[in-house]
Length: 106
Ligand SMILES: [Zn+2]
Image 1 (cartoon, rainbow, N blue to C red):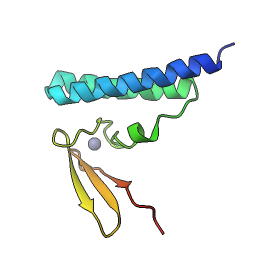
Image 2: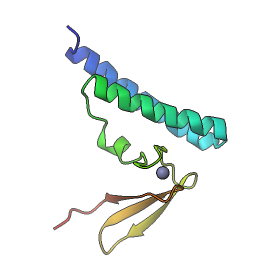
Image 3: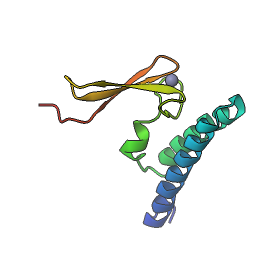
Image 4: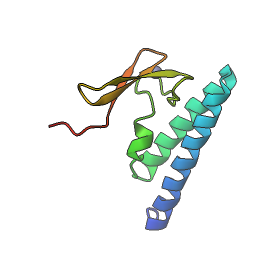
């Protein structure tokens, strides 16, 4: 069986591990490491497509939709809180903004 429960579980584990690696590489900061971080993000995406598992929300929110950076505050993105709207704006170094809501919209 190709798409068994087990292989999907392993796939999710791999995605989590790739995300951690992407974060570590991003923290290292040099160009080669950052390129690797993007590659890990790309691999995680491919695994999720291949095994038809979704990338956990917390991880998905941390990937830039424009350039594929794994967002690490203080390294490649800045975080601004917009308390009136209840979200944190993660601004990637490429200029792309992600809004992560911490308050339920009413
Ligand atoms: Zn970006």
